[in-house]
Each structure stands twice: as structure tokens, then as C-alpha cells.
Image (cartoon, rainbow, N blue to C red; front, side, top):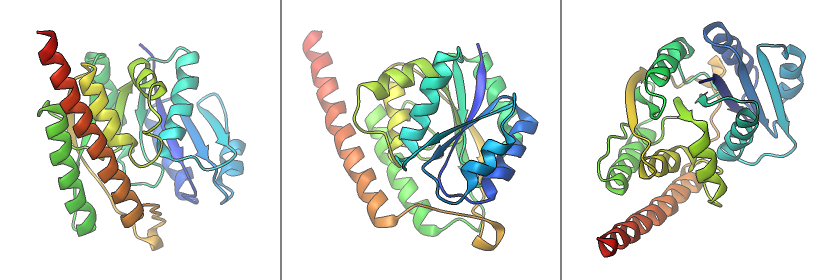
Length: 242
């Protein structure tokens, strides 16, 4: 087994540089996929590239899922088996990377999912929408134990996730995290949940959010509609084969 840290980033400013350094102190190598950023961070990251840090730059913004897939494909070609994916904006605790990697090494056939522990700084709208998404994911997976559908601090087995994404036109933007967990469950990749704190940094602290309530909630609604219908069809097909 070979594990790496994979960080997709889009216009997160100087905060991504701090996130990368924090991640490198916990685990190496760290790979960063710059998803069409126009804030100068691609150049800053490339200047820091060394044996512990690989930087890949996409010319145009394609979405989180597309950036992750780009990194996963390259990692698979390089012989890596698992990737811990984390956000670049400082929300995820780099100090927990080793714990997640150890859980993955002990359970290589599982997906290790972070379950967020929110502080008082968490936007209420985000928390409520997350609860709704979690309900639908429980339904779609028949309560197989996905602790949180949207938290992006996770260790994935690379091979099954790449195969899943190759056969789907979706999972390229904000819909990536939830759909990845569901489809991996359908494929028999069991979830293991670990609670971790999540931070919502203010703009003064360098926090950057590209979440758009209307656009991204519509995307999630469409995703859950697709997954529920597909889950119903899958159950019907399995019943007919019995």
C-alpha cells in the first residue's frame, strides 16, 4: 500500500500555502491540483515543488471532483493505492492526517470518512443543508453507515473510485463528496467514520468559500434525485435475479 495526501485548490489565496506546509509536516508526499486558479497560487506552489510536494496545474477551472480525479489518475499511474483528500482552505485539521492514514492502512478496503464536529462559527444554513443531504445518503445506501455526506476530509482507495468516476459524467463539482461515498458503498467499500473538528475561517483569517447556496444546492438536489432513482432500479434488478 502507498498513501499520499491530495489537495485540490481553486483561488484559495495564501491559505493554500499554509495548508500544504501543515500537511507536509504530517505526511509526505503531498500532491496539489491547482484547478484553474487565477490568484497567483499556482506559481507560488510551483516554486516550492520538491520531492515532498508535487503540483499539477489545470489551465481552466473544472470543479473539485474533476481536480481530484486528475490527481487520482496520476497517483494510480505512479503506483499509489490510497489518497487522503483534504480542502485547501484551512477547514480540515492537518494534525489528524496520520490518524486517518493509520486507519486506512489497517483497513485498506474501506473508505475513511471524516465526520465534522462543528463549532459556533459554522453557518446555520450549511449545517441544515448537510443534515438534509445526510438523510438522503442514508436512504440511498440503506443506512450502511456514512457518517457525513459532504465533509471532504477522507481517505479513498484509489482504484475503485477512479473506475466509478470513469463510468459517470457527474461527480465533477460540488457533488463529488456525497456521490463518491454513495457509489463506493454500492461497490462494497465500507465506510469507517472518524469525528474531527471543522473550522470556518473568516475572510480576515484567510478563509475563502466558493460555495454558492442556490447553484450548489440545486446540484445536490439533482444528484440525490439521480441516486435515489438509481438505487430503486438497482434494488428492483436484484430482486428479479433472485
